[in-house]
Image (cartoon, rainbow, N blue to C red; front, side, top):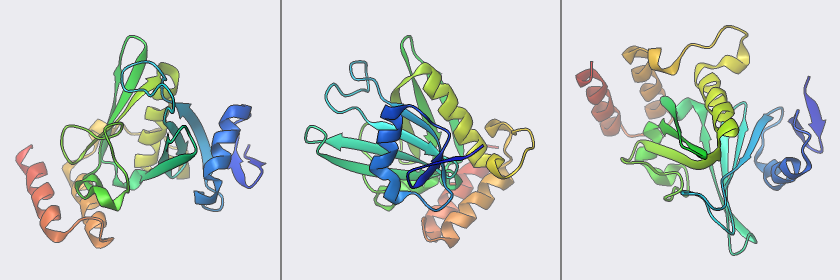
Length: 197
């Protein structure tokens, strides 16, 4: 059952996590439910000793708050699930990394700040590093459900890997129609998908 905490919707009861949600509550849409709050490791590879990033997953998107200047300022990136085309989890010994593909990352300025903490090997790759293992597994499931629109139905989740090329091209077409990618970028990505059949 959804609980309204302050001016946002969540089932989370941990005070530190509620405090983190409070910092981004003005970004949340009406009835957008916060499902998970995860903090990157302070000391492990990919983490930050003084100001670890905070990853907030809602039923609509991922919000990454990247504090700096000893936490007095922060950059915020939000990544809607409908721009993510695939996601996977890489488990490390102590922490895990979420890797995802998002064609909208081709034009990084569309999503705001994307630095080494969440950028991947090419312009479409993203990585959220140094997450506690349990939180990373939960985040993977939330992203998969978001990609599939699971939060609107009670049907079993379809694995991301089983998405057809037609589904991915359809997503790219929507991104082009929304102005997130150009017609040229759409054609390049579509051709790349077809080549990889």
